[in-house]
Amino acid sequence: MRMARVRKYDEEMHAVPDHFMFRISGTEEKTSVEYEEEFLTSETRFNEIGKTQADRQKSRFPDDRFESSYANGIGTVRVSFTGNRGVCLSRVLNELAFQAKCFFNDEAVSELLEDTSVRDTWI
Image (spheres, rainbow, N blue to C red):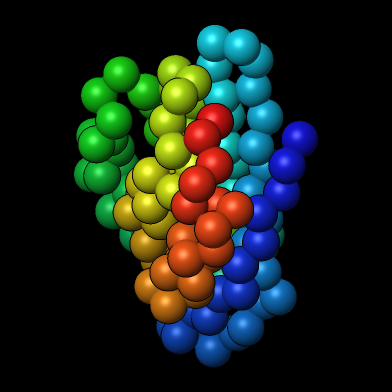
């Protein structure tokens, strides 16, 4: 299992957590990427985010599957990708950023994607 890290800044919550953690795993046929983090926020905000993300569930990877799930109040946000192997990691991370844009900062994602080891990794 490999880990990719990137700093993030959530302007709405005025918080600067240390990093994103992506869990990358898979078999010979399939690969999985997961992002998970606990957030302390209002139930209303989580419900709104959940509704927004549900509208974005149509993946730009038609053969693959992205899932987003959100908890209320003090809970966990989890965004995951499962799909066919042979996709560039940067494409997966771009899609995860699109799926959960409320939790990603464009500059932080760009910084991660500029990392050669991430950009050139195929999973």
